[in-house]
Length: 475
View 1 (cartoon, helix red, strand yellow):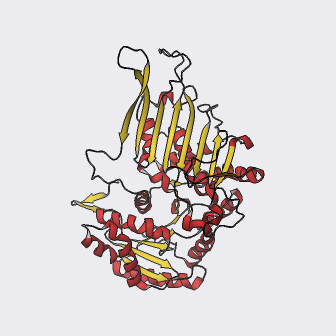
View 2 (tube, one colour):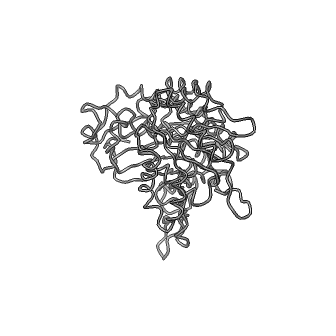
View 3 (cartoon, helix red, strand yellow):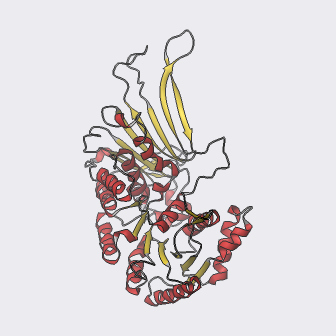
């Protein structure tokens, strides 16, 4: 992230207010407040910047600042003065999201804050609330006039929406139609924070900036692709939310499919939000229909006794899907998407498996000497290429070797990789939508996922022991 620089001081945009609905919730405390503090401390926020927390709890400005201070103590070592300065940019309003009068009070609050800035400010509304509240907040924001810009030249307004965006194709279409009536597309920032992860951003650069790889990025050379999102953690305190969502909606409809789109998309021709989002949507629009042999779902033992989970819950905590693309580049190449909770390890990666050479110069005919490229999204962000080289010594043969690149360079251990939410918030302020999903992408993703949800209603839910690799079934 490179902020504009005036006289040696980073400057990012004109006066801006960020309104966080759900300001005292888990997402806000774990991700948003720390991300905003890091941006502030590094000079990546406008000099005139105000965070307005909105939630039901009646804690006032002082209570909200105290909550933020407690959250930020682990991040502020050596930055105590920055922390105290940051806290002065926080105000708070207790409000019920469902009541129109709350938005009238919010409007009065924002006008008062703007008075301290000396001019009309940009407004960014972040919905860090359960998806069930989206429709109400969208309507009330629009009806209240809060989303109307000050003029054509100043005071833009934008809305940031967390996933999941809808529950299936029908609800997503309904929600998107409402958004389209209330806001313009360039005002809508649908968040998939995985797109903002440093290593995932580099997939396109790796492919399209190196002549070594793009010529062989097709079905003639690639055997299959694996996309894995593994979590060792259980559902724990998120049971009441998770049980109504499940693994496929939680990470499959968004994170996993966005990773597939990035690894499989065509060259967009230029680095612009419009072209890149079109290219991602094009991939998702060419996913072939599935059958029952292509999907597996599972649930870890002990899930049904988690707090907030029903004793007879059929919600999946694991899925594995085999997808294929109806395109000339990828015809015949299977893409395996796999994710689960309570697994043996936590990692997110994309692995591209190449076919063995047709005429391998090796001493073991029939042995698979395919190359493998692994994009490690988390942890230990980096890229690894597996290749084959002659074994040292008198005995002939090949052995695997690796070329590896890590974002956490050992020669510069203090270099900090920005958190995905820092990038999300920064780009939203700057108006860059590359890392945000478009309407076409969301609709294409739900057209893939909704049939799977219908398909496996009559399919078995495979149990697996927590801490293992998932259901023990033939793959």
